[in-house]
Image (cartoon, rainbow, N blue to C red):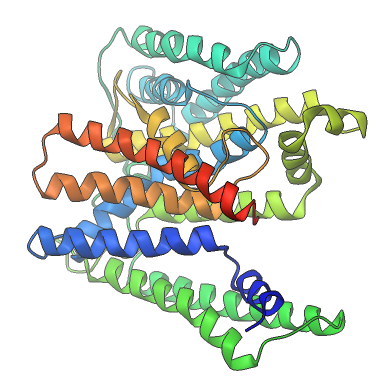
Length: 398
């Protein structure tokens, strides 16, 4: 197969070589941990737990990719999530607010934080690293001050479902229907791309090749749906189905992917990351886009905070501690260049899954927490080294 044909094949598959390698790494990790743990890793129960545990980090990582692409960073996301989460729980438990009102109040506070930090970065030119490093400490303290360090339980049954707990799955029927819908969308997208290439007289692979390429993610989707529908809590008569946090994560990833590929805002973000000075010269409103980017981050941090306290059934001062490292690691492992200009929403999804699978696998193997932290830290370094070597060898394929 010639090189142009090979490139056409990768492009129609929807992923690049890096993402294929990440998928292969994830599969190898899962098989290795399943074997080393005596068959515990790939069980429906563990996969269900891994999926819903990854959702919080994954939700924030999708937008952190765009922040990094635009040559910024936010080290305060974990502390802001803790601040917002404790505030939402406090308003429900201590002040007697309804959960929608408390969530809107949490969102308003998060947007004020984004206005403050984004304004210092966009309007005054203060490096986002410095601004958010201060925010990392300040908003962790604010989380303590909201409720004087006391845990704030949440009791609303509907709100608790958002965390994917006892009643936090969408059920088997809805899960299979959603998997079928995803399959239809993937095949429809494949046919649309074939027609577009034929209309523009571009090379088209045989239909069977495109069908097989599309069948791979479709099989993965149905396998995941089967695993979620196979997990059943002992005291319940029906399996859980897809956890609601994972559904929220998927919707966020689809929305962010649409913004990146189909909106002017998404194009502006990548243009700013490629060359901020050139972006300003051609008329891109760099300051406004930066403010919008921080506001979008605030929205998804609020969503992550809601999911997290719903899962824990409480808001605690330690909520989100260290999460910024996992979020940034997921984005970087997913291919976001720290120098800006390139990144992938789907890559952040894979990066979050790799991080959580690694942590969950080591937990099953009873690896001490100190060793787990060392290994995860070194994995991040390896990911950055791989990114540098990959770009030198292949360039940026996105």
